[in-house]
Image (cartoon, rainbow, N blue to C red):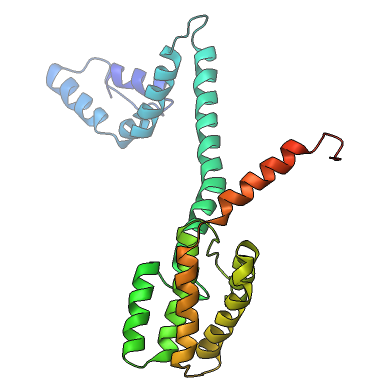
Length: 240
């Protein structure tokens, strides 16, 4: 082993080996090549992870702020990363469920997955009625009633809403139609769950209800205006 090799081994903490005191030039070259081919040298070299870690640390250390450098800059960067992570977590926790609930509300309609619009439901109901399929016609027409009020943002078609649950919600906003809404819900449940075939009269009842509600103005604005008038005319003590 050459003197350089012995010193290298000592620096790396490797065991020393015998080396000629005065090797000639060819022997010195061969000894040096043999020494450098030792696997211990390759193992002592920094890995790609070591180099990457060092580069990242150097980059963080090179950051500068207006009033400081090094550690203050690193603290600022870490704080910004934590803030971004908190924002992303908040979006995932609070934003995504609301989006899913809204998406589900547009898919589920009276217990079934149905993306059809009110116009499409009315069209399909009319086709079923023309074919004498009263059960399908009644079911689609009542769904059209529910979808139309949802599209007008009067009564939301929430997941899990039943036919009578929708009838009660709509009846509170259209009191004059409350009885007809309950009767239409009975027809819907009859053909949907009780295997009733329905009739032309049953379909005519639901269709007439749909036509009246479609022509009726939205009560939402009127109710809001009435609430504002009541609030404006009521003193802070709660007495008029």
